[in-house]
Length: 153
Image: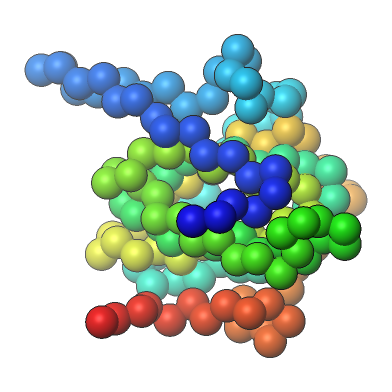
Protein backbone atom coordinates (compact mmCIF):
# COMPACT_ATOMS: atom_id res chain seq x y z
CA UNK A 1 0.00 0.00 0.00
CA UNK A 2 1.42 3.42 -0.89
CA UNK A 3 1.80 5.51 2.27
CA UNK A 4 0.80 9.08 2.86
CA UNK A 5 3.86 11.34 2.88
CA UNK A 6 5.53 11.57 6.34
CA UNK A 7 3.47 8.69 7.83
CA UNK A 8 5.63 6.02 9.46
CA UNK A 9 4.85 2.52 10.71
CA UNK A 10 7.05 0.80 13.25
CA UNK A 11 6.48 -2.94 13.76
CA UNK A 12 6.47 -3.66 17.48
CA UNK A 13 8.31 -6.60 18.98
CA UNK A 14 6.47 -8.53 21.66
CA UNK A 15 8.59 -10.55 24.05
CA UNK A 16 6.70 -13.35 25.79
CA UNK A 17 7.50 -15.87 28.47
CA UNK A 18 5.59 -17.81 31.13
CA UNK A 19 5.15 -14.63 33.19
CA UNK A 20 3.47 -12.55 30.48
CA UNK A 21 4.67 -10.20 27.79
CA UNK A 22 6.51 -6.96 27.22
CA UNK A 23 6.17 -4.65 24.22
CA UNK A 24 8.19 -1.46 23.78
CA UNK A 25 6.24 1.21 21.93
CA UNK A 26 8.28 4.39 21.44
CA UNK A 27 11.89 4.96 22.42
CA UNK A 28 13.88 8.20 22.37
CA UNK A 29 16.50 6.44 20.23
CA UNK A 30 13.96 5.45 17.53
CA UNK A 31 14.62 7.07 14.15
CA UNK A 32 11.03 8.34 14.10
CA UNK A 33 11.15 9.88 17.62
CA UNK A 34 10.66 13.66 17.61
CA UNK A 35 9.96 14.98 21.12
CA UNK A 36 7.87 13.92 24.12
CA UNK A 37 4.69 15.85 24.84
CA UNK A 38 2.55 13.52 26.93
CA UNK A 39 1.02 10.04 26.93
CA UNK A 40 -2.68 9.29 27.13
CA UNK A 41 -5.15 6.45 26.69
CA UNK A 42 -8.34 6.60 24.66
CA UNK A 43 -10.88 3.88 23.90
CA UNK A 44 -13.76 3.01 21.62
CA UNK A 45 -16.57 0.52 22.06
CA UNK A 46 -17.35 -2.03 19.32
CA UNK A 47 -18.45 -0.37 16.09
CA UNK A 48 -17.86 3.17 17.35
CA UNK A 49 -16.13 5.65 15.03
CA UNK A 50 -14.08 8.49 16.50
CA UNK A 51 -13.18 10.77 13.59
CA UNK A 52 -12.19 13.07 11.88
CA UNK A 53 -9.63 15.43 13.34
CA UNK A 54 -6.17 16.82 12.70
CA UNK A 55 -3.52 18.89 14.48
CA UNK A 56 -1.55 21.86 13.19
CA UNK A 57 1.64 21.23 15.24
CA UNK A 58 1.27 17.84 16.90
CA UNK A 59 2.56 14.48 15.66
CA UNK A 60 0.62 11.50 17.06
CA UNK A 61 2.03 8.04 17.82
CA UNK A 62 -0.80 5.48 18.12
CA UNK A 63 -0.44 1.98 19.53
CA UNK A 64 -3.52 -0.21 20.05
CA UNK A 65 -2.86 -2.35 23.14
CA UNK A 66 -6.25 -4.05 23.64
CA UNK A 67 -8.62 -5.12 20.89
CA UNK A 68 -8.44 -4.11 17.25
CA UNK A 69 -8.92 -0.75 15.57
CA UNK A 70 -9.21 0.34 11.98
CA UNK A 71 -7.22 3.61 11.91
CA UNK A 72 -7.74 5.73 8.81
CA UNK A 73 -5.71 8.69 7.58
CA UNK A 74 -6.57 11.26 4.92
CA UNK A 75 -4.04 13.68 3.43
CA UNK A 76 -5.60 17.05 2.58
CA UNK A 77 -2.34 19.00 2.83
CA UNK A 78 -1.68 21.62 0.17
CA UNK A 79 1.53 20.79 -1.66
CA UNK A 80 1.75 17.20 -0.42
CA UNK A 81 2.66 14.66 -3.10
CA UNK A 82 0.06 12.33 -1.54
CA UNK A 83 -2.74 14.93 -1.29
CA UNK A 84 -6.11 13.15 -1.52
CA UNK A 85 -4.70 9.76 -0.46
CA UNK A 86 -6.41 7.59 2.16
CA UNK A 87 -4.58 4.95 4.24
CA UNK A 88 -6.18 2.23 6.39
CA UNK A 89 -4.31 0.46 9.16
CA UNK A 90 -5.64 -2.53 11.09
CA UNK A 91 -3.90 -2.26 14.44
CA UNK A 92 -4.01 -4.07 17.73
CA UNK A 93 -3.36 -7.42 19.33
CA UNK A 94 -3.22 -9.17 15.95
CA UNK A 95 -0.99 -6.51 14.36
CA UNK A 96 1.17 -4.72 16.96
CA UNK A 97 2.47 -1.57 15.29
CA UNK A 98 3.13 2.05 16.16
CA UNK A 99 1.59 4.50 13.69
CA UNK A 100 3.16 7.95 13.44
CA UNK A 101 0.68 10.55 12.14
CA UNK A 102 2.04 13.91 10.96
CA UNK A 103 0.40 17.29 11.53
CA UNK A 104 -2.39 18.34 9.14
CA UNK A 105 -3.30 14.73 8.25
CA UNK A 106 -6.88 13.90 9.16
CA UNK A 107 -7.23 10.75 11.24
CA UNK A 108 -9.79 8.69 13.05
CA UNK A 109 -10.50 5.17 14.18
CA UNK A 110 -13.20 2.55 14.49
CA UNK A 111 -13.25 -0.30 16.99
CA UNK A 112 -13.45 -3.51 14.96
CA UNK A 113 -13.13 -5.97 17.84
CA UNK A 114 -16.08 -7.40 19.76
CA UNK A 115 -14.98 -5.58 22.93
CA UNK A 116 -13.64 -2.15 23.85
CA UNK A 117 -10.34 -1.33 22.12
CA UNK A 118 -7.64 0.74 23.82
CA UNK A 119 -5.24 3.15 22.10
CA UNK A 120 -2.14 4.61 23.73
CA UNK A 121 -1.04 7.88 22.12
CA UNK A 122 2.27 9.65 22.73
CA UNK A 123 1.89 13.00 20.98
CA UNK A 124 4.68 15.52 20.58
CA UNK A 125 2.70 18.30 22.28
CA UNK A 126 1.05 18.76 25.67
CA UNK A 127 -2.72 19.22 25.40
CA UNK A 128 -3.63 22.88 25.91
CA UNK A 129 -7.09 22.98 27.48
CA UNK A 130 -7.62 26.68 26.68
CA UNK A 131 -6.40 26.42 23.05
CA UNK A 132 -6.40 22.79 21.87
CA UNK A 133 -4.44 21.94 18.72
CA UNK A 134 -7.38 19.88 17.50
CA UNK A 135 -9.64 20.57 14.55
CA UNK A 136 -12.67 18.34 13.98
CA UNK A 137 -14.82 17.30 11.03
CA UNK A 138 -17.92 15.07 11.10
CA UNK A 139 -17.01 11.37 10.71
CA UNK A 140 -19.43 10.96 7.80
CA UNK A 141 -18.61 14.15 5.90
CA UNK A 142 -18.46 14.16 2.12
CA UNK A 143 -15.28 16.29 2.37
CA UNK A 144 -13.25 13.13 3.02
CA UNK A 145 -13.60 10.26 0.50
CA UNK A 146 -14.02 7.45 3.01
CA UNK A 147 -16.90 5.22 4.15
CA UNK A 148 -16.54 3.80 7.67
CA UNK A 149 -18.86 0.84 6.89
CA UNK A 150 -17.40 -2.67 7.12
CA UNK A 151 -16.28 -4.00 3.76
CA UNK A 152 -17.61 -7.56 3.43
CA UNK A 153 -16.87 -9.91 0.61
